[in-house]
Image (cartoon, rainbow, N blue to C red):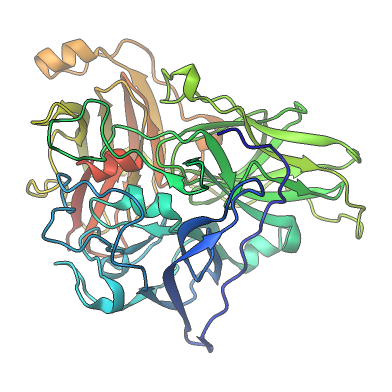
Amino acid sequence: MILSKFVDELPIPPILKAREKDQYHTYYEVNMTEFKQSLHSELNDTTVWGYEGSYPGPTIEVESGEKVFIKWINNLPDKHLFPVDYTVHGAHADVPEVRTVVHVHGACVEWESDGYPEAWFTKGFKQVGPYFRKQVYRYDNCNRPCTQWYHDHALGITRLNVYAGLAGFYLIRDHRERLLNLPGGKYDIPLMIQDKTFNKDGSLYYPKQQEKPVPGLDTSIVPEFFGDTILVNGKVFPYLKVEPRKYRFRLLNASNTRFYRVKLDSGQLIYQIGTDGGLMEYPIGIKEIMLAPAERADIIIDFSNLEGKEIIMTNDAPAPFPEGDPKNEIGSIMQFRVTLSLSNIDTSVIPTYMMPLPKIREQVASKVRYLTLNDNMDKYGREFMLLDNKQWDAPITENPKLGTTEVWYLINLTDDSHPIHLHLIDFQIVDRRDFDVEKYNKERIIHYTGSTMPPEPQERGWKDTVRANPKQVTRIIMKFGPYTGLYVWHCHILEHEDYEMMRPYIVIQ
């Protein structure tokens, strides 16, 4: 179905209001419900799931260090919007079809409030998963100012729940960031980018069966899913009217599988000021930004002296990434129209320096781990991916000690790029290096075939998600803490995460 581009205005998610707030804590309640929403003016209203009656959910804004308590409430129907595949771990027929558990992506949080995939709960908390601990989550927000997001994380159905609409922004601010005089207020806009496919009646399409169905087996797990339409903040190919001034945009790739290589068709520079984990040391001016699923980029676009112009944010990333099938590509994301008159003089700045970014030195690492990314076939002949060639239920093998620093070698033996996400901590990318996959598969030896490549300029900051490219070893370094407990690391291609490409890890005392 071909929908007209740039006919609907970009919605900006509302800021969630606290139920209670004093000098010691802030308390929110967030309901998950099913409702209809207009995603494009040429479509019938679409049934979606969302937080607080909106897709995306309302933006939660907090201060660094603020003690925040959130009661996440599941008021969803018992029947899922999409076909549930009961052959996938965690989604067997003996658990409720509709389960939710919320993960604030990027949060520095005790494990009981992290949204462990088996800590799910149903409507009214009638049934809960084996790791369910409490109804109210606590977030201490021990992060730098940064762009995080919250989304569903229920084992075996994350791809379906997020695709249905369960995602929203979670922004952390602080006094030091305010002193930088970045574009703020209505000139600081989050942009959640997702791809979807619609049925003729306006409902969301998600594949019902794999490409080569097994006789008598109704399944919905696919190696990847690419929608044919791009939505920003829940609207198909929207436009945004802007003033001729600087704007701050928080880009988030919230797609299941699709990567984006974002450019402006005007050819102008995009000024990147932040990565997943907050502000960089200094801004960089770049022509394009690569975003794997779950990655964020904090950017400034300067529309000064562009009165009357229309600028399209484009995408030319292959899908799947990086080898890609041209038929899966979608070239446009949204449009900016510089048609509003300047409401006041733009005194915001693109600072020359923002904050120190101390580099973690490899010498302080007490442990090095070599972890493979593997491609496999299941008993039905379906492709599935693994981390370190282990399934979700295998015994835990990653058990860093609280306060220690480790280097992880992510050895990608597959043909795909995988966005690898670690819960609890931010890391730094050390480097990437080409290696001989065939030799590794035969002899388990890393034979490098190229020199080390430093992280790309856009990745030189705190990260919680890294692109592990095929036929490369990607090295990351991180210090584990400030909490002990049970967390996970996984590929953030949701179809991979749901089908075994996720592992628990435990931070020990």
